[in-house]
Length: 280
Image (cartoon, rainbow, N blue to C red; front, side, top):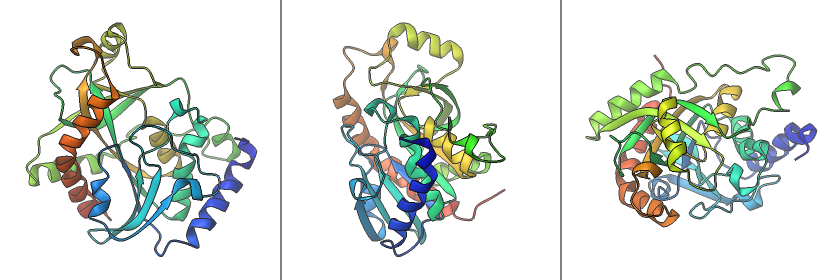
């Protein structure tokens, strides 16, 4: 991607969507593989394949549909991304976050993101849902490189409270209301696509990480740059390498996500219902 053309392309994509979407979204919901049933409960859904949108990257990861859906959930206008774009697919860091710049330009002011992760903390079990309170970026890249500098001010984004404290408090209350146990911890992101070694997991645990995955951090950095409030939920899809039995496979991740999906979607819907206009 030519970084000089990044922002003009954002405007082109935003204009294209504005002509086709009835209502501007106020929230972005990123659905990890297996959580697509969230869209079934939306009203007035307008689905668009990302390949139709000018300048959007193409999704190639297994289990990620590469579609976006505009509509309402509990009366809240939002847009869902059914799957996301990953660095390990060969996209540049800036291509990975391009959609968030476009959707923010359309009017979104909040990002609710989900992911499937490995549990580093041995107290985490497959099927648990973890509220992300902070992250460690070991992806070896930052999506703002070459973009932030194009601003005349605000080039250096603060990542203190990258995950909005008020939204985290809201998520805890909603989990309690819907009868779910919500774990909490630090998410560590690696580039992928290979899974981590046992030695790496032991090192990550010493760094203070509770779960590991191959996504999320780029969009969270971009969202903070754009002034969006962020909430992130990690779905524990398997134990991490040093306490995993046998080989690690993507199939086990998709199976685990399918099993925990009803609980995760219930939590997501409750958060959306209460998050709109929420602040403390």
